[in-house]
Image (cartoon, rainbow, N blue to C red; front, top):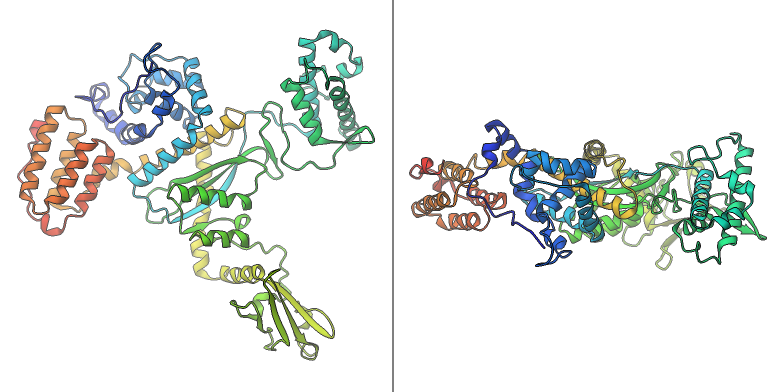
Length: 613
């Protein structure tokens, strides 16, 4: 039976005020626990969790907002299920964050694992990431028009194997299943084959010499063993549908070929291949290894005290950065966080990506990959070109071409120069123009635009703008150290993606906690006496009893009657009545900032502080 308590429903008195010391109470409200309780908890998908339970039948569930919150908190604190269950029962600060009554809470790890499965299977982690990020961007008034993008590698909780060991471990696990479920079939296999895979996975092939020839011979032997087992059990319905057999056939297809009825190990396999049967979704990156990766986009507004991750896109390790940027921008656009400027490293900066983002209204600031550009040669940017027609007007020495035509179908501009002019040119040894009687030079729009971008990179203004990109490297390092993003406790794509998204969303909460209470406390620094009076009132109203809230609203009404800008304060009053939370307070503070100076010169009568203490 469903059990949910609306997080915006306030108690007559906050019991934690008497549980904590005054200093501890102030700190827990000012830290991430306060942000979680007053801002985040109401954003969590408790209604989606509730769909898995009956309205009337069965034992009441744990309070669903608190369970969604605990699943969330355990990820960005990198807890095990046992540690999270203990925190739910014994950690008073966590109980405060989850809006639970202090003490008298019970939880076992099996219960928590059930809710973890529901969040994972229903795909709620992405929704939590989006809702939390949008909520914090709104609460903190974040400027998302300038962002920076990068990817980082993520290791799942699996062993890392080389090719030979991967093939051998796959064979060994299949043989273990055969021995367990069909002893007669196992005993009928060649004794040498069974003995080869008898040692444990850690000791498998430990007696093999380490020279290249011995390793190649061993790998070929394992490939032949795999092929023999696949053929032997291909028609055996007891085994050919088991996970171990399917893993065996997949690894064989990815690592080997069949030539003349003989198994041969492939020279290269690419990165989109299985890395461990325990995590069949993990793939391989040639530079970073086995696992997954995540694309992260972060705000980089110089005027902001903290930066938030606006988009997190978990991926396979084999996915490339150039192909991923369009997906990231599409996601940001759907959530209303599309930047005007996006800073990224050279891997993202292809001409296609620059043009595609330009159509979305986003300027991609990224270095041009100039690794193949010969600095001793002339290039298209040394020629005078008409960007409208793509025709070349003059060469670097000022000579006009005989002919220059752009072919719109293939996108190539072909230009011919006079051989006599080229014959006496001092730049001929560096010139890209080719031929003898008819000197020809060809270029594309992408080459011209890339050369123009490369020239722009040398300007001081470009370097100053691009310098902000480096900040995301440090942010990724801090996220990994604080949340455990670098090496996860789980494996398998659904669990890995859930962990990544919740850890990144949790990082945003930790960032918001640095400024949210300070903004609440100092939000009316320059709004005059009316603002000072109202903020003091709001701070007391947040945890006041119902009768005292009524007195507070009466005080606000008196202020409104004395203030000619009453329409603004009416809006503020509606905000307080509709949601006694940080959202409502933020709306009131925004209204107060709009008060003109004339409305702030005459303070209202003192508020009845004693009645609301």
